[in-house]
Length: 363
Image (cartoon, rainbow, N blue to C red):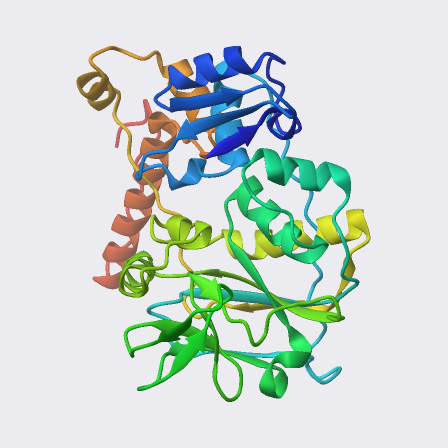
Protein backbone atom coordinates (compact mmCIF):
# COMPACT_ATOMS: atom_id res chain seq x y z
CA UNK A 1 0.00 0.00 0.00
CA UNK A 2 1.61 3.24 -1.16
CA UNK A 3 1.03 6.10 1.25
CA UNK A 4 1.50 9.54 -0.32
CA UNK A 5 3.05 11.84 2.28
CA UNK A 6 1.20 15.10 1.41
CA UNK A 7 -2.06 13.13 1.41
CA UNK A 8 -1.27 11.62 4.82
CA UNK A 9 -0.28 15.05 6.15
CA UNK A 10 -3.79 16.36 5.50
CA UNK A 11 -5.13 13.95 8.12
CA UNK A 12 -2.40 14.12 10.74
CA UNK A 13 0.69 16.25 11.24
CA UNK A 14 3.78 14.16 10.47
CA UNK A 15 7.42 15.07 9.71
CA UNK A 16 8.14 16.22 6.15
CA UNK A 17 10.97 13.66 5.87
CA UNK A 18 9.52 10.53 4.22
CA UNK A 19 12.40 8.37 5.44
CA UNK A 20 11.74 9.38 9.05
CA UNK A 21 8.02 8.73 8.75
CA UNK A 22 8.71 5.32 7.20
CA UNK A 23 11.18 4.42 9.96
CA UNK A 24 8.87 5.38 12.82
CA UNK A 25 5.81 3.62 11.41
CA UNK A 26 7.84 0.50 10.56
CA UNK A 27 8.75 0.16 14.24
CA UNK A 28 5.02 -0.38 14.90
CA UNK A 29 4.87 -3.52 12.77
CA UNK A 30 4.49 -2.21 9.20
CA UNK A 31 7.30 -3.40 6.94
CA UNK A 32 8.53 -0.81 4.44
CA UNK A 33 9.01 -2.07 0.88
CA UNK A 34 10.32 1.21 -0.53
CA UNK A 35 10.43 4.98 -0.08
CA UNK A 36 10.00 7.13 -3.18
CA UNK A 37 11.12 10.76 -3.09
CA UNK A 38 10.88 11.77 -6.74
CA UNK A 39 7.66 13.62 -7.42
CA UNK A 40 5.23 13.33 -4.52
CA UNK A 41 7.03 11.43 -1.73
CA UNK A 42 5.41 8.05 -1.06
CA UNK A 43 6.05 5.13 1.26
CA UNK A 44 5.16 1.60 0.18
CA UNK A 45 4.09 -0.40 3.25
CA UNK A 46 3.61 -4.17 3.31
CA UNK A 47 0.21 -4.55 5.00
CA UNK A 48 -0.41 -7.97 6.56
CA UNK A 49 -3.69 -9.80 5.98
CA UNK A 50 -4.91 -9.14 9.53
CA UNK A 51 -4.77 -5.35 9.09
CA UNK A 52 -7.24 -4.49 6.31
CA UNK A 53 -7.98 -1.30 8.24
CA UNK A 54 -4.56 -0.02 7.14
CA UNK A 55 -5.00 -0.58 3.40
CA UNK A 56 -5.70 3.13 3.09
CA UNK A 57 -4.35 6.53 4.11
CA UNK A 58 -6.78 7.01 6.99
CA UNK A 59 -5.74 3.73 8.63
CA UNK A 60 -2.06 4.69 8.52
CA UNK A 61 -2.99 8.20 9.73
CA UNK A 62 -4.51 6.65 12.87
CA UNK A 63 -1.23 4.88 13.53
CA UNK A 64 0.67 8.12 12.96
CA UNK A 65 -1.64 9.96 15.36
CA UNK A 66 -0.64 7.55 18.14
CA UNK A 67 3.07 7.88 17.33
CA UNK A 68 3.30 11.67 17.23
CA UNK A 69 0.36 12.36 19.61
CA UNK A 70 -1.31 14.69 17.11
CA UNK A 71 -5.06 14.95 16.47
CA UNK A 72 -6.59 13.11 13.53
CA UNK A 73 -8.49 15.10 10.90
CA UNK A 74 -11.24 13.04 9.26
CA UNK A 75 -11.81 13.66 5.53
CA UNK A 76 -14.81 15.82 4.70
CA UNK A 77 -18.04 14.02 3.85
CA UNK A 78 -21.35 15.21 2.43
CA UNK A 79 -24.37 12.98 3.00
CA UNK A 80 -27.64 13.93 1.33
CA UNK A 81 -30.62 12.75 3.43
CA UNK A 82 -33.30 10.73 1.71
CA UNK A 83 -36.48 12.69 0.90
CA UNK A 84 -39.69 11.74 2.72
CA UNK A 85 -41.23 8.59 1.28
CA UNK A 86 -43.83 9.16 -1.39
CA UNK A 87 -42.69 12.68 -2.30
CA UNK A 88 -41.38 11.69 -5.74
CA UNK A 89 -40.69 8.66 -7.89
CA UNK A 90 -37.29 7.12 -7.10
CA UNK A 91 -34.57 7.64 -9.69
CA UNK A 92 -33.07 4.25 -8.85
CA UNK A 93 -34.57 1.09 -7.43
CA UNK A 94 -32.27 -1.03 -5.24
CA UNK A 95 -33.32 -4.52 -4.19
CA UNK A 96 -31.14 -6.62 -1.88
CA UNK A 97 -32.00 -10.29 -2.37
CA UNK A 98 -29.02 -11.97 -0.69
CA UNK A 99 -28.27 -10.49 2.72
CA UNK A 100 -25.89 -13.35 3.58
CA UNK A 101 -23.43 -12.36 0.85
CA UNK A 102 -24.12 -8.63 1.05
CA UNK A 103 -25.21 -7.47 4.52
CA UNK A 104 -25.28 -3.79 3.49
CA UNK A 105 -25.64 -2.02 0.15
CA UNK A 106 -25.72 1.74 -0.37
CA UNK A 107 -26.26 3.67 -3.58
CA UNK A 108 -26.63 7.31 -4.59
CA UNK A 109 -27.59 8.93 -7.87
CA UNK A 110 -25.39 11.80 -9.11
CA UNK A 111 -25.64 14.12 -12.08
CA UNK A 112 -22.10 14.33 -13.44
CA UNK A 113 -19.95 16.01 -16.05
CA UNK A 114 -17.24 13.66 -17.26
CA UNK A 115 -13.77 15.11 -17.81
CA UNK A 116 -10.19 14.92 -16.60
CA UNK A 117 -9.40 15.16 -12.90
CA UNK A 118 -7.64 18.21 -11.49
CA UNK A 119 -3.87 17.91 -11.42
CA UNK A 120 -3.56 17.49 -7.63
CA UNK A 121 -5.94 14.50 -7.61
CA UNK A 122 -4.33 12.84 -10.62
CA UNK A 123 -0.84 13.28 -9.15
CA UNK A 124 -1.86 11.67 -5.88
CA UNK A 125 -3.37 8.68 -7.66
CA UNK A 126 -0.25 8.26 -9.79
CA UNK A 127 2.01 8.47 -6.72
CA UNK A 128 -0.15 5.75 -5.12
CA UNK A 129 0.24 3.55 -8.21
CA UNK A 130 -3.18 4.12 -9.81
CA UNK A 131 -3.64 5.40 -13.37
CA UNK A 132 -6.04 8.36 -13.67
CA UNK A 133 -8.97 7.70 -16.04
CA UNK A 134 -11.67 10.36 -15.60
CA UNK A 135 -12.89 12.55 -12.77
CA UNK A 136 -15.73 10.23 -11.72
CA UNK A 137 -13.70 7.00 -11.87
CA UNK A 138 -10.77 8.76 -10.21
CA UNK A 139 -12.94 9.84 -7.28
CA UNK A 140 -14.03 6.24 -6.65
CA UNK A 141 -10.38 5.15 -6.61
CA UNK A 142 -9.40 8.12 -4.48
CA UNK A 143 -12.00 7.22 -1.83
CA UNK A 144 -10.81 3.61 -1.78
CA UNK A 145 -7.18 4.65 -1.25
CA UNK A 146 -8.11 7.32 1.27
CA UNK A 147 -10.58 5.60 3.61
CA UNK A 148 -10.47 1.98 2.40
CA UNK A 149 -13.99 1.72 0.92
CA UNK A 150 -14.07 0.29 -2.63
CA UNK A 151 -16.79 1.81 -4.83
CA UNK A 152 -18.19 1.41 -8.33
CA UNK A 153 -20.04 3.82 -10.62
CA UNK A 154 -22.70 2.57 -13.07
CA UNK A 155 -24.01 4.65 -15.96
CA UNK A 156 -27.59 4.99 -14.73
CA UNK A 157 -29.05 5.33 -18.22
CA UNK A 158 -27.44 2.03 -19.28
CA UNK A 159 -29.12 0.07 -16.47
CA UNK A 160 -32.30 -1.69 -17.61
CA UNK A 161 -35.22 -0.61 -15.48
CA UNK A 162 -33.04 1.94 -13.66
CA UNK A 163 -32.55 -0.72 -11.02
CA UNK A 164 -29.83 -2.59 -9.13
CA UNK A 165 -30.56 -6.07 -7.83
CA UNK A 166 -28.06 -7.74 -5.51
CA UNK A 167 -28.48 -11.47 -6.12
CA UNK A 168 -26.65 -14.68 -6.96
CA UNK A 169 -25.80 -15.37 -10.58
CA UNK A 170 -28.28 -17.45 -12.55
CA UNK A 171 -27.36 -20.75 -14.24
CA UNK A 172 -25.51 -20.07 -17.50
CA UNK A 173 -25.26 -16.33 -16.84
CA UNK A 174 -22.22 -14.54 -18.28
CA UNK A 175 -20.69 -11.10 -17.91
CA UNK A 176 -18.07 -9.19 -19.86
CA UNK A 177 -16.08 -7.40 -17.19
CA UNK A 178 -14.33 -4.04 -17.48
CA UNK A 179 -11.13 -5.75 -18.65
CA UNK A 180 -12.95 -6.98 -21.76
CA UNK A 181 -13.06 -10.66 -20.75
CA UNK A 182 -16.30 -12.63 -21.14
CA UNK A 183 -16.72 -14.64 -17.93
CA UNK A 184 -18.94 -17.58 -17.02
CA UNK A 185 -20.67 -17.14 -13.66
CA UNK A 186 -22.16 -19.68 -11.28
CA UNK A 187 -24.78 -19.63 -8.56
CA UNK A 188 -22.19 -19.26 -5.79
CA UNK A 189 -21.18 -15.84 -7.14
CA UNK A 190 -22.85 -12.62 -6.11
CA UNK A 191 -23.71 -10.20 -8.90
CA UNK A 192 -25.11 -6.70 -9.10
CA UNK A 193 -27.75 -6.88 -11.81
CA UNK A 194 -30.15 -4.51 -13.50
CA UNK A 195 -33.68 -5.57 -14.39
CA UNK A 196 -32.51 -8.08 -17.01
CA UNK A 197 -28.89 -9.20 -16.53
CA UNK A 198 -25.74 -9.02 -14.41
CA UNK A 199 -23.92 -5.68 -14.49
CA UNK A 200 -21.08 -6.33 -12.02
CA UNK A 201 -19.49 -9.06 -9.92
CA UNK A 202 -20.03 -8.14 -6.29
CA UNK A 203 -16.82 -6.99 -4.62
CA UNK A 204 -14.62 -7.88 -7.62
CA UNK A 205 -15.20 -5.93 -10.86
CA UNK A 206 -17.86 -4.07 -12.80
CA UNK A 207 -19.21 -4.95 -16.21
CA UNK A 208 -18.55 -3.26 -19.52
CA UNK A 209 -22.20 -2.81 -20.51
CA UNK A 210 -22.90 -0.28 -17.73
CA UNK A 211 -19.46 1.33 -17.81
CA UNK A 212 -19.39 5.11 -17.63
CA UNK A 213 -17.95 7.01 -20.59
CA UNK A 214 -17.52 10.49 -21.98
CA UNK A 215 -21.26 10.78 -22.66
CA UNK A 216 -22.41 9.74 -19.18
CA UNK A 217 -24.58 12.34 -17.44
CA UNK A 218 -26.02 10.35 -14.54
CA UNK A 219 -24.42 7.65 -12.42
CA UNK A 220 -25.53 5.23 -9.72
CA UNK A 221 -22.67 5.11 -7.25
CA UNK A 222 -22.34 1.85 -5.32
CA UNK A 223 -20.79 1.47 -1.86
CA UNK A 224 -21.31 -1.84 -0.12
CA UNK A 225 -20.08 -4.47 2.31
CA UNK A 226 -19.65 -7.97 0.88
CA UNK A 227 -19.04 -11.29 2.63
CA UNK A 228 -15.23 -11.86 2.68
CA UNK A 229 -15.30 -15.59 1.93
CA UNK A 230 -17.69 -15.08 -0.99
CA UNK A 231 -15.44 -12.45 -2.58
CA UNK A 232 -12.33 -14.58 -2.02
CA UNK A 233 -13.99 -17.65 -3.58
CA UNK A 234 -15.31 -15.71 -6.58
CA UNK A 235 -11.99 -13.96 -7.18
CA UNK A 236 -10.15 -17.29 -7.12
CA UNK A 237 -12.59 -19.09 -9.42
CA UNK A 238 -12.45 -16.31 -12.00
CA UNK A 239 -8.70 -15.77 -11.64
CA UNK A 240 -9.50 -12.12 -11.14
CA UNK A 241 -7.85 -10.21 -8.29
CA UNK A 242 -8.52 -6.49 -8.01
CA UNK A 243 -7.86 -3.70 -5.54
CA UNK A 244 -11.49 -4.00 -4.47
CA UNK A 245 -11.41 -7.78 -3.97
CA UNK A 246 -8.17 -7.57 -1.98
CA UNK A 247 -9.91 -5.29 0.50
CA UNK A 248 -13.28 -7.03 0.64
CA UNK A 249 -11.84 -10.52 1.08
CA UNK A 250 -9.93 -9.36 4.16
CA UNK A 251 -13.07 -8.03 5.79
CA UNK A 252 -14.71 -4.65 5.36
CA UNK A 253 -16.21 -2.25 7.87
CA UNK A 254 -19.99 -2.53 7.69
CA UNK A 255 -20.28 1.08 8.86
CA UNK A 256 -18.19 2.37 5.93
CA UNK A 257 -20.55 2.23 2.88
CA UNK A 258 -22.50 5.45 3.61
CA UNK A 259 -19.26 7.20 4.60
CA UNK A 260 -17.77 6.25 1.23
CA UNK A 261 -20.63 7.84 -0.66
CA UNK A 262 -20.48 10.90 1.58
CA UNK A 263 -16.78 11.30 0.86
CA UNK A 264 -17.33 10.90 -2.89
CA UNK A 265 -20.12 13.50 -2.77
CA UNK A 266 -17.78 15.98 -1.08
CA UNK A 267 -15.05 15.35 -3.68
CA UNK A 268 -17.48 15.67 -6.60
CA UNK A 269 -18.52 19.05 -5.25
CA UNK A 270 -14.92 20.09 -4.60
CA UNK A 271 -13.72 19.36 -8.14
CA UNK A 272 -16.97 20.33 -9.88
CA UNK A 273 -17.62 16.83 -11.23
CA UNK A 274 -21.20 16.37 -10.07
CA UNK A 275 -23.87 16.65 -7.43
CA UNK A 276 -26.17 14.25 -5.65
CA UNK A 277 -29.75 13.85 -6.85
CA UNK A 278 -32.29 12.45 -4.43
CA UNK A 279 -31.23 10.86 -1.17
CA UNK A 280 -28.91 8.11 -0.04
CA UNK A 281 -30.29 4.60 -0.57
CA UNK A 282 -29.20 2.35 2.29
CA UNK A 283 -30.26 -1.30 2.30
CA UNK A 284 -29.23 -2.63 5.71
CA UNK A 285 -31.76 -5.30 6.77
CA UNK A 286 -30.04 -6.43 9.98
CA UNK A 287 -28.08 -3.60 11.62
CA UNK A 288 -25.17 -4.76 13.76
CA UNK A 289 -24.44 -3.38 17.19
CA UNK A 290 -20.94 -2.26 18.08
CA UNK A 291 -18.82 -5.00 19.61
CA UNK A 292 -17.68 -4.61 23.21
CA UNK A 293 -14.33 -6.23 24.07
CA UNK A 294 -12.96 -6.65 27.59
CA UNK A 295 -9.23 -5.87 27.69
CA UNK A 296 -7.33 -6.99 30.79
CA UNK A 297 -4.05 -5.36 31.80
CA UNK A 298 -2.58 -8.73 32.79
CA UNK A 299 -3.40 -10.13 29.37
CA UNK A 300 -1.61 -7.21 27.67
CA UNK A 301 1.50 -7.96 29.72
CA UNK A 302 1.46 -11.67 28.91
CA UNK A 303 1.03 -11.12 25.17
CA UNK A 304 3.56 -8.29 24.80
CA UNK A 305 6.02 -9.45 27.44
CA UNK A 306 5.99 -5.98 29.00
CA UNK A 307 3.71 -3.86 31.12
CA UNK A 308 1.96 -0.94 29.44
CA UNK A 309 0.78 1.88 31.75
CA UNK A 310 -2.97 2.23 31.86
CA UNK A 311 -2.89 5.83 30.66
CA UNK A 312 -0.90 4.75 27.59
CA UNK A 313 -3.42 2.00 26.84
CA UNK A 314 -6.29 4.48 26.92
CA UNK A 315 -4.37 7.05 24.85
CA UNK A 316 -3.38 4.55 22.14
CA UNK A 317 -6.79 2.92 21.81
CA UNK A 318 -8.55 6.28 21.71
CA UNK A 319 -6.22 7.56 18.98
CA UNK A 320 -6.93 4.41 16.97
CA UNK A 321 -10.65 5.17 17.06
CA UNK A 322 -11.88 3.01 19.94
CA UNK A 323 -14.32 4.17 22.60
CA UNK A 324 -12.65 3.21 25.88
CA UNK A 325 -14.58 2.64 29.09
CA UNK A 326 -12.49 2.13 32.24
CA UNK A 327 -13.16 -1.14 34.04
CA UNK A 328 -14.11 0.49 37.34
CA UNK A 329 -16.87 2.49 35.61
CA UNK A 330 -18.12 -0.66 33.91
CA UNK A 331 -18.17 -2.53 37.23
CA UNK A 332 -20.32 0.25 38.72
CA UNK A 333 -22.76 -0.03 35.82
CA UNK A 334 -22.93 -3.81 36.13
CA UNK A 335 -23.58 -3.48 39.87
CA UNK A 336 -26.47 -1.09 39.27
CA UNK A 337 -27.88 -3.39 36.61
CA UNK A 338 -27.62 -6.40 38.95
CA UNK A 339 -29.31 -4.51 41.80
CA UNK A 340 -32.17 -3.49 39.52
CA UNK A 341 -32.55 -7.06 38.26
CA UNK A 342 -32.78 -8.44 41.81
CA UNK A 343 -35.49 -5.89 42.62
CA UNK A 344 -37.50 -6.92 39.56
CA UNK A 345 -37.23 -10.60 40.51
CA UNK A 346 -38.48 -9.85 44.03
CA UNK A 347 -41.49 -7.97 42.70
CA UNK A 348 -42.23 -10.82 40.30
CA UNK A 349 -42.33 -13.24 43.25
CA UNK A 350 -44.90 -11.05 44.98
CA UNK A 351 -42.49 -9.57 47.51
CA UNK A 352 -41.36 -6.00 48.03
CA UNK A 353 -38.45 -4.54 46.07
CA UNK A 354 -35.05 -5.02 47.73
CA UNK A 355 -33.42 -1.88 49.07
CA UNK A 356 -30.08 -1.83 50.79
CA UNK A 357 -29.93 0.42 53.88
CA UNK A 358 -27.73 3.46 53.66
CA UNK A 359 -24.24 3.12 55.09
CA UNK A 360 -24.23 3.40 58.88
CA UNK A 361 -27.98 2.86 59.14
CA UNK A 362 -28.58 -0.62 60.61
CA UNK A 363 -32.04 -2.13 61.02
